[in-house]
Length: 347
Image 1 (cartoon, helix red, strand yellow):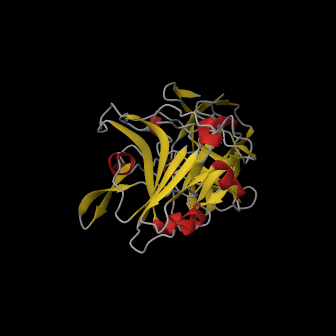
Image 2 (cartoon, helix red, strand yellow; image 1 turned 45 degrees about the horizontal axis):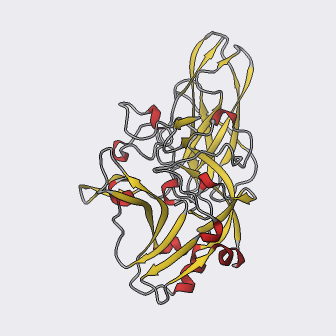
Image 3 (tube, helix red, strand yellow; image 1 turned 180 degrees about the vertical axis):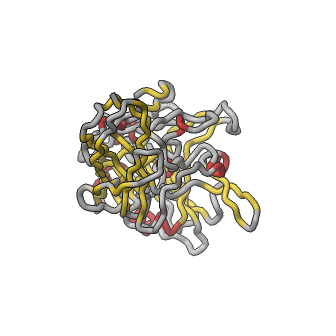
């Protein structure tokens, strides 16, 4: 589904959800600027900053390093933005700015260990090759590259990868070829594409996409302070019935979808067909995979009376977080995980 042609922003049609791994050609695409075209033999990753040994690494050198493969779900922090009232700025995603893939690459920690991180280091900045000027408010100060930082503790987790393969194939250009960051459990803005530089920093990073965009209000000591977006929130989404789908009356209908919870596991999904007055347990399908979504299903005996009905799903995770019923306004136009009614027509 085309949400924007330039830069290219494409949505996965969530109602077609039918496989644990989202195919590369259906996976959502999020770009802020034009797509850089990079040849593998000309790619270099610069590693510098608060390290003992600055160096650069080529694509072939990266491929020769010990690799790791993980399965992880990634969601754009604006997924579901079209449902916000009043309308908020940003790409008007429905439900499909999310996907699950198998990623292969080199742990970022191996690169950092080779560089020798100094004791004063606090963050690791990941910078992409995509660049441009943000002309809408809040405007950027001229041209900027897309860059985000990770706390050193997160960057050193073995699951955080410099990935060069996606679902067993070379990373597609639209997904960051030749190398992108994979940051399991965190929203997609941390998964920097077309990675060109790793900068170890002794001070917190305050770049445009860290401090101006992709942040929310947090209440600390009675004051609202801006904080960068990090971990994905607990969330269940309905794939079928699709939005405004027509379903037959007095029949057994399979309601199904997916749920995810960032760094936690999904432990429960409930479904309501009466606007939240009662909730019924859905069946979790398959086995849990850390960082990956979990499919679920519920058998709904549709009403005998024709009309419009709302299907709702909510998830609970291993950290006892429950998907909220109401939108938190402090999240601005991001982190949209409150329960969304899915209207359907019964005939």
